[in-house]
Amino acid sequence: MWRISQTFFVLITIFVASVWMYYGELSRKRSFLLDQEISLSEKGIGPKKLYLTNEEWKKRLTPEQYHILREKGTEPAYTGKLWDLKEKGTYLCAACDLSLFSSDTKYDSKTGWPSFWKPIEPLNIKYEDDFLMFANRTEVLCARCDSHLGHVFEDGPPPTGLRYCMNSLALKFEKEFEGSK
Ligand SMILES: [Zn+2]
Image (cartoon, rainbow, N blue to C red; front, side):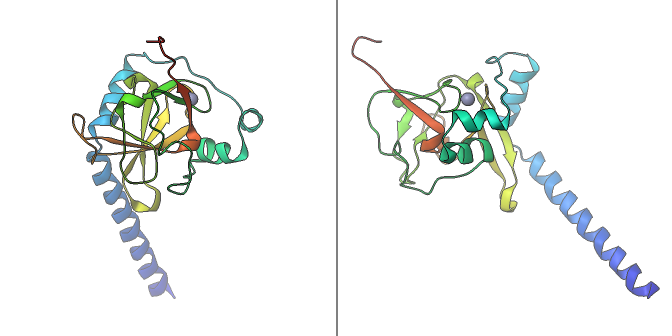
């Protein structure tokens, strides 16, 4: 009996050490985006925060929006309203109306999700490590209300080489009217 529990203990220790080393390695590989965000937040600049309770968010958002924005959901590809939109305008956070992306930086990534190569204002975006399903992805959040918007990948077009892969449900489109620029 003692030998079995001793073996079990050793196996658990090896498992915990492996997981710890795996995540340590991933966090050392953190993309420059996270470093950039940390340096900005250290300076204490960025949009004024908006904090609401889950109940308040539920009143403000549709159940589908709530799932994406507040529960980090992902809409199925090619189902959103914005992936194929080519009109000129601004994409806002669907939860708090903060300006996030311009149609000038939108491109067809052939993924079925609205994709951009740059945010309107770096301070309006927040990044976090996402280890879901053991994939090291960089999550993109709204810097004002901390809502989940999508992910950013480093396989986008020039000049940034970034692909901000967003959920249509996380965005609100504001059309640019003639003479508004
Ligand atoms: Zn927001």
